[in-house]
Picture: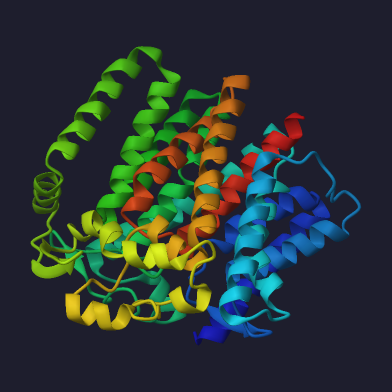
Length: 448
């Protein structure tokens, strides 16, 4: 398919399913199912709508929320939560930063809303009670099976089924044939293997919800099988960050659920942190070697000192390498236009990158957002994640029989303190993350 035909196919097919559920079951089940279904389509299928690039996910979110608002049972007014306030802060930070950097345009509030608030509210209004969680989990379980099988097939056969149907993805982030351990690194419907892994990981807490809602032992066995397939799908991306993320998040969830595991798992985490703190370069090189990373080392200049770096070591140096730019970014940052591609179009940075041999990509979510939105925007992201974690754990301890909020909180905790220091917050998995945070907000609002 061409890009437009693929986009149109995804939007029309998902809209048809949405309308069927909309009239048969109501706006809430239809909203949740449509958003999950839209996740199945490639992120590179985009068209320009009023000057804004719109992929299938965003288009379906707009259609589904419009239908929700128009339905008599589409309840909009509900108790506000702290997460609502956090999203509002990021929304206004986006508007103020871009208005300051490139000037205010009529489309700016809509673009900022589409990026931050739209996926959040789509998750917030898709959940009103526990039955909605069970409904969505069925759709997510099916999606995870599809994504995981596509990932495994791609790693083994070196054929991306999404590209076979929808055409090749643009080669922006990585070459199409990148491999490790002799396996092709699967990127599925996303722009990079690491984003695909994080995308699958971001949806994995729903497996807990699906497993918990199955009272029959055979159904739970199927849930375990789906979980193992999902983990295999993450492994098939041959990306270290998603694998570490899902393992640590799973360990955190076990510690949350089973008390006698807390001390052993806690000691393992403390030992790992202390070992890394004692010799970060040695640990990074050892992990890279064990995981197939025979990387070319090169010399860069950071703060007037020569530093040997590599693809893996760059995560250790990226904060210090861009510290001057982060300081100069000030409260509002350089804006979206200056940071929406690599290398960033920041005044003076291009010449410094050439003279100091700096790496072009910025594999750190906090650093990149600090450059884009400044100190304030970066702080708002940290507040959003912290509030999401607190909300998830509060919901779990308030109702321990519902494990889903605890699973989401455990995952977001790992993402906040580990994953976003190793990969920048790509919208490939950032949109599902905002949607999941919106689900937590919906659950919290329903409790009030």
